Image (tube, rainbow, N blue to C red; front, side):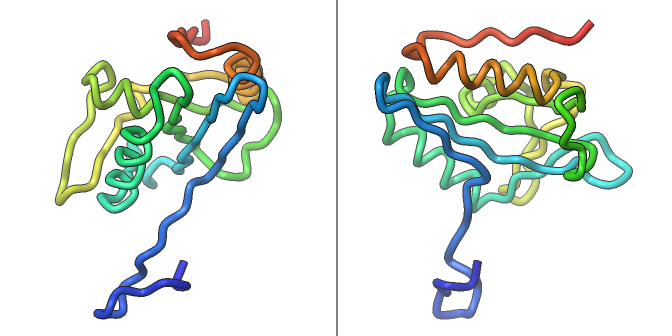
Length: 142
């Protein structure tokens, strides 16, 4: 992350945790994955990353992209049946998913995200890649 630095020495780079594409439908899926803060049921997205994701969203038609925000209890949970929590950048921007701001950072509560298995998330992503994006519906776990 230190490949490009501002004159004051701070890192001027950021990353996206996942990108997937469908050449046939010209669909792009992006994702930012965060572990819930220890002892709290919330993820924090720093202000630089938030700005980058919003800028990315503004440059790509909404019908051609989906930007996921994903929370996990632990990064080592990688089995298909392990649970993760998700929402989308657009849902937060439309205030469908509540979020708080602290010093420019975005905080999203676990209870405001949609729980799903890793396998179900993968199936959803594959479905979005196969079809042009019109809308997205999440199903909560029973």
